[in-house]
Length: 121
Image (cartoon, rainbow, N blue to C red; front, side, top):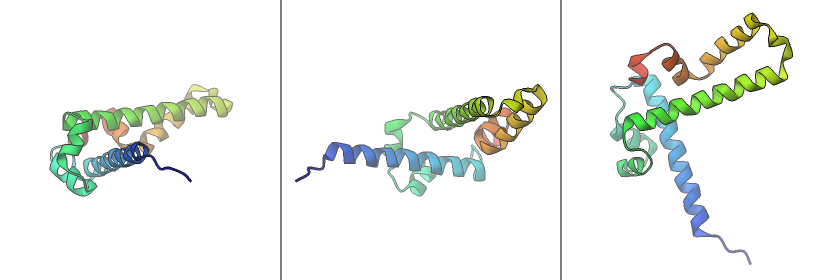
């Protein structure tokens, strides 16, 4: 007979709420911009209480910072993969082209890179 731990189930639902919160925030930022993205709207669309957001982030800026850092980490991992798996990209011009295309894969990173204050404040 197997026993299901409530603790691990709680962690999964907590992780799911964090993921949903971040996904909704990313979507709202890209669609509505920084000023029109509110914690109330994030909570409503993520189907969680606003207090639940504040359990993980102190402010909207903290949440957005987490999203941007997540995209920067993703971009760095992609850059590392390109450098290791595609030695033909060793020429600076080819590598620069690869980096440029990565900017479009990560929209919040692109907003940071292009100083898009409408999107990320």
